Image 1 (spheres, one colour):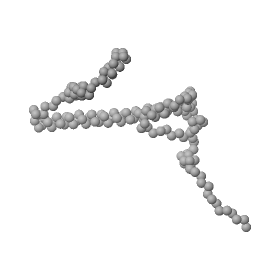
Image 2 (cartoon, rainbow, N blue to C red):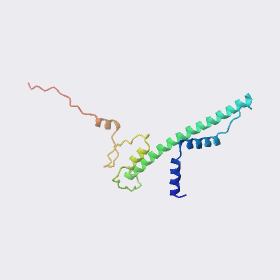
Image 3 (spheres, rainbow, N blue to C red):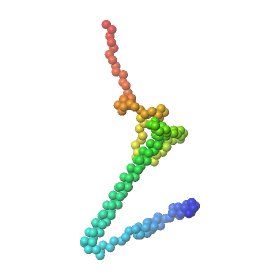
Image 4 (cartoon, rainbow, N blue to C red):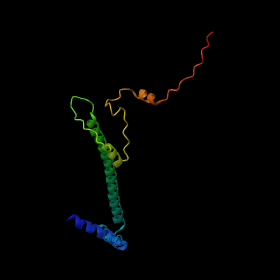
Length: 161
């Protein structure tokens, strides 16, 4: 199938009326949903069928929850790996291995583009200047005090006697 045929199919799909779309939906649902004949079942058969359907629904919900949790974890891991790669390209920790430092692109930072793609991830907190590439060795209290305003205390004037 060529791109042209694909675009023709998309155009044909967009040109369908609401009634045609509803009919296609009804046909697809009728193929997927098996009719359940409850009139021929006795009480115990109905209880067994209800338990079977409940177990199936419970399994599907638990699978959905597990997959959703896995997706969120993978999303976080992707952001973490992108940040690590970015740090390695900046110079890393300065260990025994040599890391090739790539020049920063003049356009927007690739980390910012990933942050737009994954809005639930908290922003990166910079604890060192990006120009000197040295890790800040001060403690948390010292960094916090750096942002506090130093208010000059008014001292009483000394009187010379």
